[in-house]
Length: 206
Ligand SMILES: Cc1cc2nc3c(=O)[nH]c(=O)nc-3n(C[C@H](O)[C@H](O)[C@H](O)COP(=O)(O)O)c2cc1C
Image (cartoon, rainbow, N blue to C red; front, side):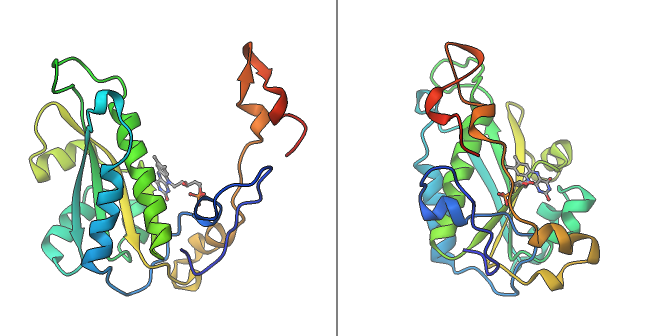
């Protein structure tokens, strides 16, 4: 849950956890309780995955452990460091690239890490926490800093905490923080029959 409401304007009813979730850059100066943090990763654990391969891994650090916190932050690009440093918890998601059962390349490894992260994010919303995922990371630096083995790859950064106040952000980040959430219309991506032919039930509404 985020202090600032950025409720999705939907064209069909959806669960309030999905409607209210958004990705803040401002976090409150308040630690996340250990049991809540554990619940987030438990939620990630129960995501669906190809062949139940569960290719997700998370490297996590809290501000109470400044050395490890700095190490995770160092794996984010500078822009992301500039705001993520206010989050009490930072993490990296890491994909296992091959299946354990046959050693073959798992074409859905990143997909499944994303699914686990999305599940984590929804659980966070339920617990009053906010999550901001980041593609802007330095995967090879993460490999070096954390000794991520061959066959695994850092996927995304994750900032977790209680939502903060937009006015605490640097000026250039204030406007995006309060801007309404935007999405493409359903009829631009839900098709039937052939590519580009809109599924009738999704047509006609924003
Ligand atoms: C895989 C992924 C990568 C992202 N990368 C970044 C990033 O590097 N920096 C950033 O500030 N936000 C990043 N975001 C946040 C998106 O910009 C945000 O989710 C999107 O604008 C939709 O906003 P909402 O989550 O508030 O609905 C990323 C989100 C995802 C899921």
